Image (cartoon, rainbow, N blue to C red; front, side, top):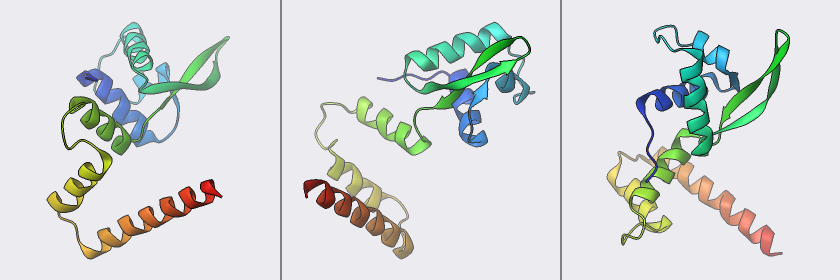
Length: 133
């Protein structure tokens, strides 16, 4: 199962909040409440890269050198789904339909939310039909 440390989660949340790729230096600057050393952030970023949770999103000139820019590989909902499916792998009721049924029935779902879900399903149905043609 995919394990994410609190510090790794902090970096992911920052990347999601900023909604753009960030360098190691920018990550340190945008988290003033933390006393991270550059090497510690480097280790955390490498761990997130190894787990496939972030990706190198280019390079940016920083003084005389170039630094890597990091972006998220998953949106928050995509990562939540990945974690849920990995945690329940092989168990009965972990197929997409069962998970969708839980979302619809266990959450406070109103008519507007159902309409949005229906629109998403209709769009996916159209995409699949076009792919068959």
